[in-house]
Length: 111
Image (tube, rainbow, N blue to C red; front, top):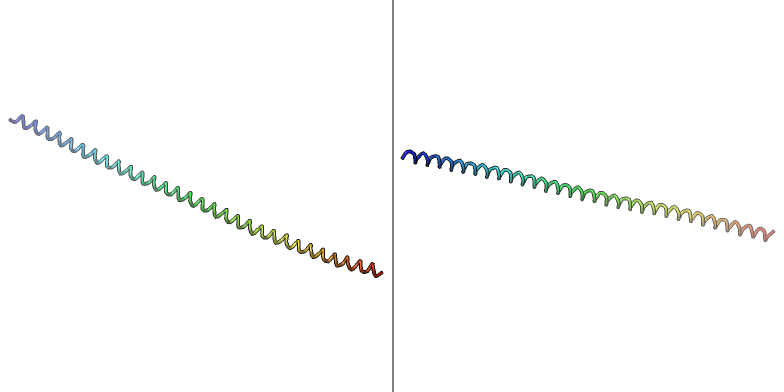
């Protein structure tokens, strides 16, 4: 019965080989899965980073716009103040001229 035992051994060996191969395949699959997961994690992180950067960019633009608007407001205020003081000056000058005119007319009447 030596032949039967040899056949059994060979069958056991090929079964062991098959099991080893399956174990290797599983390990490969797990490594590939891990790599995919890591890549997915990297993608997720880079997507989050991109989102954050976009938000920061938007915030900067918003702050910039608000600053410009505020500067515009203060410039408008400056212009308004300037115009107002010019108007006051013109009015004062007009008053002074009126006074002078009245004085002149009085002088003419008196003469």
